Length: 471
Image 1 (tube, rainbow, N blue to C red):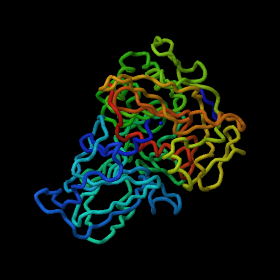
Image 2 (image 1 turned 45 degrees about the horizontal axis):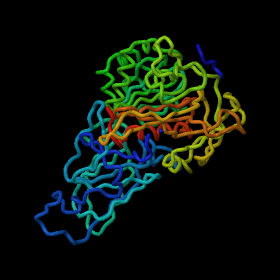
Image 3 (image 1 turned 90 degrees about the vertical axis):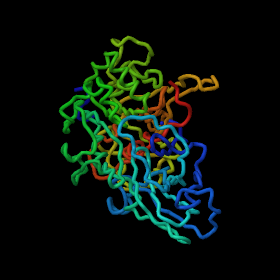
Image 4 (image 1 turned 30 degrees about the vertical axis):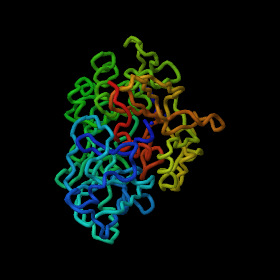
């Protein structure tokens, strides 16, 4: 056992409309087409313009399982950059397999984006009955709504909370998720706190296979698995991988890593991401990122391979250094920072406790510029820019890892700008995320700052693709 008992993409891509793979353009964020305001029939150009009184729609978008009434007062979690749009016809289904979601204007729809605190307001709506869709990534809630003339309709939290279950008959959509159940990172606890399963009074995941809204593949962890299949079984089968929008690979100790010696497995992961899949890896599972995309993240030490083109026998196991805590972490991404700042929940302090001097702190308002992150097990030393191809004008297209969270390496007076959580977009349409720390290091009630980062990124990683898709 390797561990003792003591032991980021373009910021503009913050929204997505998944309607046959379409979303609003990154260059048009303020309203969309005016067809909906032209009449409830979708905008008949043969009719004279409507000049009567119009209505307004407003509300706050809440994260699954974390809306008012679902958590203690003051602990609610909004959804930054959520898309809210009106149409006169029912929105198309979300594809139930990996797909390329290229950002584009939604035809025949009026839309707005919620701000960093989840608040939205849509004005100038012709009175009538519409479909309203509220969406972030592959989380979407479709419903009918009446907008009267000269009135502001304030949507309730029951109407604006993203769903925790897949129920298309009632307009509820969630991403298809595969979890490689690891030894150490209790990512399933966070899924449970989002309503994708259940947790007990101590905050520990308790759902059996019948209660989970995601599939589990054995990778050293103890929770129930899908058909007793291992993670090696999943990555050996591209067709099966394509059934999932997001694949999570939390920290594990050398489980199934021998499969990475196989050219077909590495090719499957790369092709999955190329087709639009989202691949999320944490700390000692680093080899699952590094052996497939070695050029994007350079690690400290020889436990992972950082040389593109290295022979499979040279691949490390991703098991990095001894644990360290980041005493001064910061939400580097601007939208994440504004979203996180001032939220209330359990915190960590830099005194006492089991993990390198970190212990439970008070329930308090978060400071997104300075918070403690526990359970780091690798170090990122560089994120070099890579040319991934050329665009239609034969100009070079580059990609590099974008830092969502930065911090120190356990040195209270040391540098505080080391990347801790990063995302990058290789060639194709998908996205890769890597975190140096356990997302859920310990069991507790509520969500720590680093766990809220995961909740944010579960939705953020699924948003539409901006820029050219490079084959």
